[in-house]
Amino acid sequence: MDKALFKLSYGMYVVSSFSEEKINGQIADAVFQVTAEPPKVAAAINKENLTHEMIENSGIFSVSVLEKQTPLDLVRVFGFSSGRNKNKFEKFDYKVMENGVPILLQNSLAYLVLKISEKLDAGTHTIFVGDVIESNILKEGESMTYDYYRKIKEGATPKPAPTFQSP
Amino acid sequence: MDKALFKLSYGMYVVSSFSEEKINGQIADAVFQVTAEPPKVAAAINKENLTHEMIENSGIFSVSVLEKQTPLDLVRVFGFSSGRNKNKFEKFDYKVMENGVPILLQNSLAYLVLKISEKLDAGTHTIFVGDVIESNILKEGESMTYDYYRKIKEGATPKPAPTFQSP
Picture 1: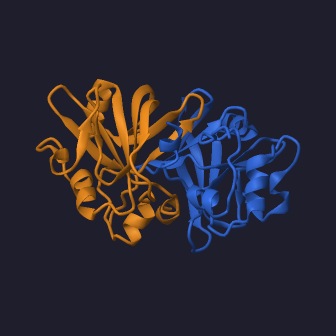
Picture 2: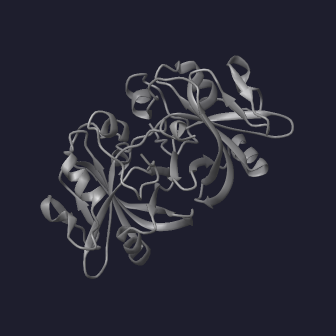
Picture 3: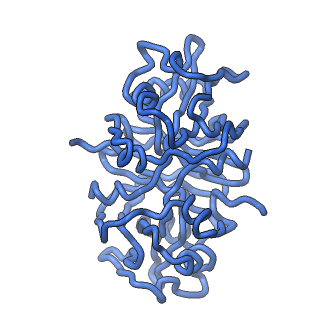
């Protein structure tokens, strides 16, 4: 069963949100466009993650699309550490939008800012669906795929991810 | 706004279901794994499609993962024609599983059979979430990505797709 699931294709994203006190972001691969009219995007986020708590409370999240050349270090910081103890953005170029949500500028091809329109409890994860309220291309280039990250970059998968598999 | 959405990465899948009278399948790119324990997969399907009606009624769907070498003709048949007037599978190798759902064998790397556990009304599309009740690798190879299909194969996007954009 596990191996068939590995044939699904994904991009690599930093999904971010905020609270009154702080900003946070995390690596996510489970992101897709749901509808074209109006443009809506869905992301599956682990309930135990700080970003989940922030999205629940603020109703806002952003999706930053990582470029193929993104260094493993960036993926490690956003994917394998918790924002509860530190500001993950500190080491990288980023911007806080007018509504308070951060977007990653470094190694990011494009960003979307989303306002929650629907959500679905799917067990360990929530699927958040949001209306695209702002978006932009930051630079041209190829998106990093999960496949590329795993095979070429030999990257690991954090335990809270939908695609995590025990070694 | 539109261009940023095009930076999201997808695979290419045939999502299938059935009724008492017939089987049907359609091209989908909006498919992702939602949770690992238990393994659940989500697919966004246009409400106007026959496959949507069949999934609603049967509570079962399958996901066949298209390989990189999939000919455009197969994508055309499953993506640009309606199963209301014909059996799309007729021209291709396929198999009907014990529970009645068809899976594509031709140009397919793997399949998943899913039983609906949750669903979410997202406007023009429904996000169906299903427990993986069966899955298998059919052959080794690279998955077709939406990006590859659009850029290298110069494939078009059917109007009912989440990622459709007016020319």
